[in-house]
Length: 185
Image (cartoon, rainbow, N blue to C red; front, side, top):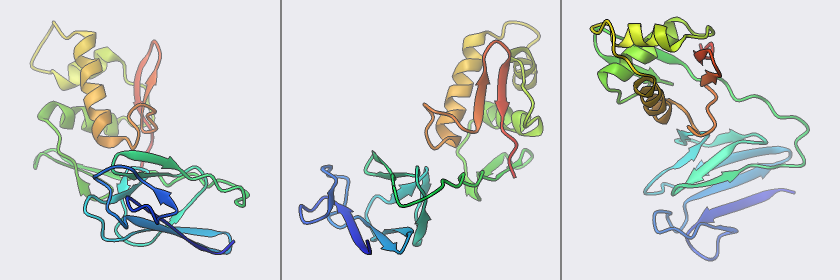
C-alpha cells in the first residue's frame, strides 16, 4: 500500500505524538513498494532511528526503533519477508587527544569512561573480568576497587554508546565472568 504516514503533535497526523517536545509536523514515513523510508521534517528536537539522529531520508527495516520526543515506536511491517541486522557502529578512540567517536559523532566521556571504552575496544570480542577492568581503568590503585565502581562505570558508558541501554547490544554482560564489547568495525 503506497503512501505517506505523518508523525507529530498535530491531530491531523496519522500517528499523533502527544508530547510538547514533538513538532506539529515532526516526521514522515514513506512507502514505495516494499520499501519504507523515514524522514525528519525539520523538527525542533530531531527524529532518531535506532539511537542515531536522522539527517536525511533513511531506509527503515522491520524491528527498527524510531524515537520522537522520548517516545519509542517499533517498526513492524508484515510485508517485509526478513529482517536485516542493523549495521554495527564504528568506534574510534584517540587516547592522547582524549576523544572518542561513535559513528563519527563525538562522545562526551569522562576520563575513566574513555579509558574503559579504550580497554574494551582493544579487547573487543573477548570477555574482560572485573579484575582486569579494575586494573586497566584504576591503574593508580593497587587495591580497593569494588564491584559497584565497575558496574556504575559500565552503566554510565552504556548510557552513552547504546541505542537502548536497558537492552545492550554492544557492551554485553557475561554473567559470572565480566563484560564484552562486541567486535566492531
